[in-house]
Length: 159
Image (cartoon, rainbow, N blue to C red; front, top):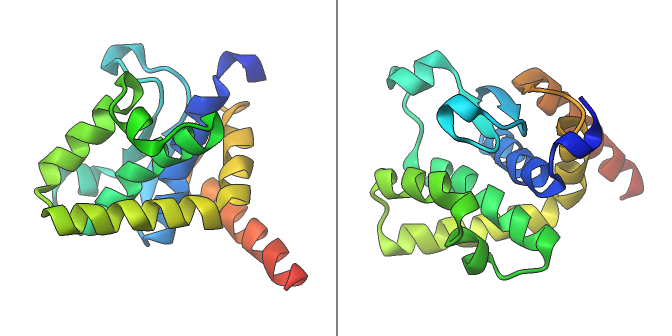
């Protein structure tokens, strides 16, 4: 796969979902920025079977931050307001995921704020994960976790 095969905004979007999941303490199977024609997705964060089946419950507030992180990061990289991206076609699955969580308005506002703060704080690691996603078909949880840990280590050295 060549880097130009994956749009940068898709790689950023999916990288932000993955980084947000790790920051929330949620484990996923893989993340991909490659189109999935069968499921009509540009890219996706794939949860483990236990999470997909509901055996392992994930707090809705954390899932909201993970869902919002992708559109927030895409808005950041495109220089657009978050609401413009969130209302667009690329965020359809994210909106559907959020709607299924049954959050109150206050919970939604808190999740938005946390997602925006995460994007600002973790932008370098999101870009690093996106770089890897632009050349790999999929990254596993362990691969993304290692990138996050390496970037966190770099940040501590500069402190």
